[in-house]
Length: 105
Image (cartoon, rainbow, N blue to C red):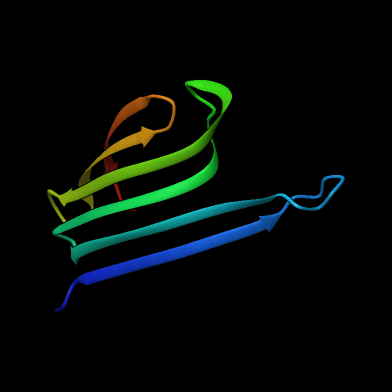
C-alpha cells in the first residue's frame, strides 16, 4: 500500500570491562503512514538495556521499554504541527508529550 513505512533495527555492543562478558542491546521497530505534505502518522516501540533523559533526570535507567506515537500535520506546504507521546516503562511508568509548530525552509 502506498505511503506505508516499516522500520526495524537492532544494535549490540560489547562492553570493554575486565571480563569482556557484558554487552548492550537495543531493539526498535515501528510502522507508519505518510501522505507527503499532508500528514504523517507513526507508532513504534523500543527496548534499551540502558536509557537516559538528560533534561529530566541525568540518572541511568535500566531495562527500558518505550512505546511512542507521532503525528505530523501540514497546515500549508511548509507549515506543520508535530505531536509526540512517549511512555517509558522501567521501574516506573514515565509519560512525555512533546508538541512543536514548525516551518520547513
